[in-house]
Length: 505
Image (cartoon, rainbow, N blue to C red; front, top):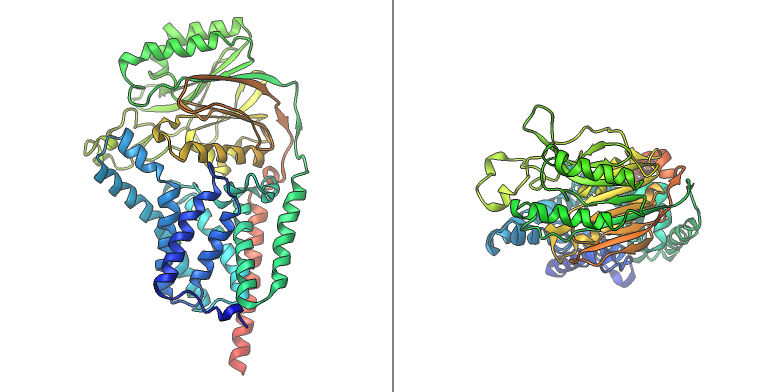
């Protein structure tokens, strides 16, 4: 018997629940950090799919996506309107198209689920199939059409008990635990099985206990690190008239911090090609760095040899000269996937938007006596790509330009992602941004220091390099894959058994 004879939300009420459930989901993420909302949001979605036809479930999945992405990635509008110079109508249209496209993923997920379960969910559907299906959705979203892993549920749990699982099964695994918690709560409610609350309690308590574990160990003595946040407005960043002012600013702030072992500049802090700045700026700066026993990580574009192609890069100046070229480029930002769109509107003709990708596997940069795992901007949203740098890297560096997104959720959400990468890998993260939020994050994902947004700043602190491996570094996503396959096999077995028993009656 179901509690309160709940038969599902019919008509517009169920549609409204799905839309609201999606719209509140971003509250689980920074800057709000109400992490339990992730479970509540998914619980409402699962209940809205109960006892409805496939078409209705698909529509509600789409509405959930509209709420989730319409609020959670509303910063896309800021990039298109404020810095891409599109008018309000066009920026709104392009943002709506992007949000609607992502929402179709959840609509398709609903169709797939309903094809497997039928109209009414069983307890096993809610506990086994739906959590694994959500896991599949997040995995698919992370690679399809180059991938968009933003708003992974596991990211939102960095301040909660489930964060204890992050270094064990990764963020994607924590997303599954959020979905599993929601499925268990839904089954408990629908089928009056209050004992199903016990696994939820155990999962969350075990996560809290896992947080007591320290998976990696210190390596060498702490190093002194300074992050230079130039706060150069995006509108004038690439202007030729701004170039020497920018270089003078970064050099002056660097020379004030020669006592640091490592100084990090943000993505494309130098706004001319490496070969253009090498003789008059970079080489003299490298000599000063060597004289002061300091290494500098500098963001700048680098021309490919004997080619018109160019990379979005970070280079180390000082004890050696070496480069990292960005591997995972941002469509419509780093490059134009549809070149024929260029010139149509300003947003499709941004300066320096023809970067090419670096090699998938590149040597780590070596600076301040440590091997550095570098990611540029959007790259650290891809856990499996950061995973390629460890355990060899003892420090992770993310250099980014968040100026595109103004005073929106994006800088806060991105910082939260960086914190999860630190926790997954068991490494400190040094995060240098154009206009905030720059930060020093320890190996547990804890914010040690951070800058304010929209102001010039230098952030200096001690960073402890780490060595060793978290279980996630050792095994990657393989345990999560095996667990998902096992759950699907158990679900399929009982589904078939119950079906055969129904026929025999």
